[in-house]
Image (cartoon, rainbow, N blue to C red; front, top):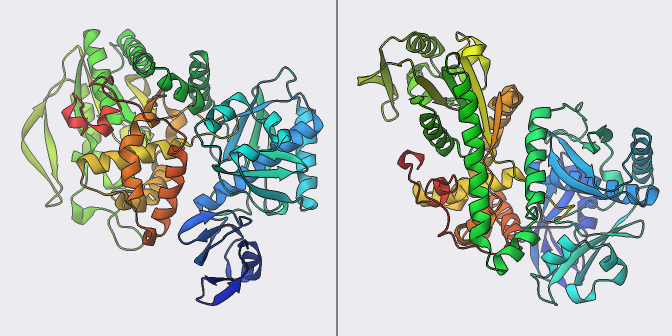
Length: 554
């Protein structure tokens, strides 16, 4: 018998091999939203996973970021099964998210019609109504059923090649069809009643609730510029046969890591040169370049590399920092809890900022402020700036895409650039790598390298960072004139060396930080480590792992 401690402190005796599902059902009235995943001794576990040791129990509710991953992952499995049941020739590949929606590309010759998609949605709704069971099975690699092996793609097999024969795997079955998905699923289909399928491009949109309210399905909001950037990255990485971790691992094993690095870096250089050429073609008109993007997207390195490409075109880049235009601390808006809100637009002295922009673009000499973060006051230390005929002004900051920031400058005189790491890499056709996870690894490594922060500090603050992005950056991303994708297809293989020790050092007692650390470690487990010596010193990745020629980037 095993001894399990419930969240309320009760001790229960259970048989070896028991799972958490009965306890989730027993305690359901104590949850604010349904429990879709368990926590056992600090680690996230599927509610149906058999357990064989004493431990402390906890639960992950659907109205959390991790809970919504379980929700959307379950819906995806239902979609894949329903599509195959109705149309055997369909072959869906998971591509990217657009808000709280997932785009799946139909890579088969069948090509789903709008009527087909309606039929698939109806089939999924029948699954929900019938509470169709999703069966969990834990097996070793060498005992995968033949029926499941037939359904495993070459990309999945490439991942399995990284595992020993006795490695434990989690397989799921729905209506007799197997699924190998990275992460927990709901016990049955009735857990995910809110969704819709929509025809989109060459595939289907799976729309589901936002984190925080699983009962409300927001209308799908198309983001064509963002989707175009994702698809361009997907098609490019597929073209060079390096769009999955399995393929990347094979290149590393074959000794072609340096070549992959060179190709990925060349793409960045080509894209930045193209942006600079576009600005140069409008040099008599465009005088203000605004660069914005979420945390750890590589904005600083992008700004400096773009400046070099502008110089190649005979344009002199000049930069000003939005941070220097913070209001004095005593005048800064406050949050509901009384703390200062430095991320809101109103924390910037918009009147002064726009006055200086207007005067600079008119050719006047301007005395620039410098914000003293220690005293919380703006100071003037004698720095002046004056633009010339062949110069442009570059401003980097989280509010760069918000029209209110530069309301006094006509649209034709500025160019807005959205910078983000929109990774095209996935584990296989059904298990994608979340862009937010890639950025979190970047931030964690940088915080450790240059800011003396351990992984717990970074992981603990990440949700606050994400909340700020959702509020101040993402609503404006499609107003950008240009989207620059800073992802590098090889970066996880480099990040692994730095990230794994940091993640392994996160103590079990750190709560949510430990849950996230274990999830990221499970993700990196499948990635082969890559030597970084071939990465050039102007690479965006150097902003995070060190060795950047752009000293200000650190």
